[in-house]
Length: 362
Image 1: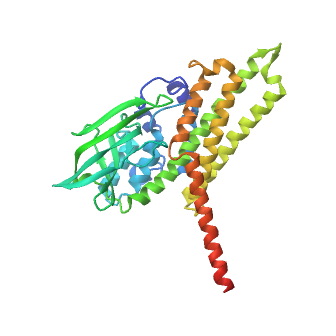
Image 2 (image 1 turned 180 degrees about the vertical axis):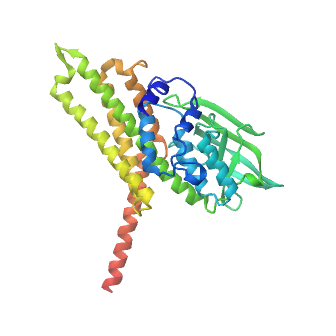
Image 3 (image 1 turned 60 degrees about the horizontal axis):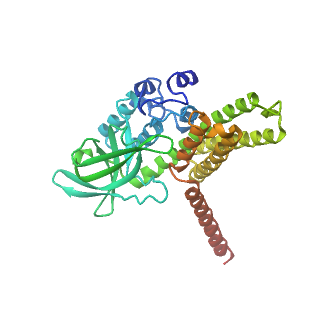
């Protein structure tokens, strides 16, 4: 995997986001979490972490996690056998590049609206505007979460070139593609609504897995950045000595490595909890994202400082790693949101325990 990424996805990769997509499918990356019955490898999120760390370390901007993790998780919740096979088969063979719209996975402060679905003869009409949708312009099929007049969420398959649908693309902080997606009464036939019993439950499971996979990408980026920084301080000399000889810089490098290793460890634990259906899965996923987001900023900023002025230049990979870490920190929930979620879970448990104690004493 490392050799392939070195040849096809180096840190200065400037190709399109889906360049080499068929190769990713042939290598089995996209079908790791797809059951063997549908042409996949039958693995879990823990198995996918190897790929996530690799693409994070290579600064690969392709929507692999969005398709291989989120797309697969959502497809596994589809009850209709034909629909499920179409999605999972397309993910495995590389014919589908998925985008997700209306999921609520938005950066803080973005006044992102929900997509509304209104009944029409033979299907529904989608109306709404979603800002800053990652990889929407790269996808050849959009999974759209839309709300009907009865406040019920539905999951729809929408062609990006549908009449009434507009994509206004722009680069994000790390030059990853994003777009504002505008739905102007876009017609979606009835058979393009996925048979998902509970869209909220499906999105909850997909969101947990995506948060952990994103944290794994961050851990991979931190590891590559630590190696790059260590190489720099060993070769760069000041006052007649290598920078690596200065004890204060050695302490900083150790702190950076500890931050990366801590992130990788909690990510692994969270993925195993999700795969086994542990009741602690949601908490561990939140802890993994919190840890990776905070560690990523620390490692990225420390690396820039150790590189000095050259770290601020576009030619230096350290700056590109920091940009990627900042992007990943905003994706699938920022640290503060996950911290609030973790606190709510703990408070709820303590409240229930307190109520149980009162009943016992009574």
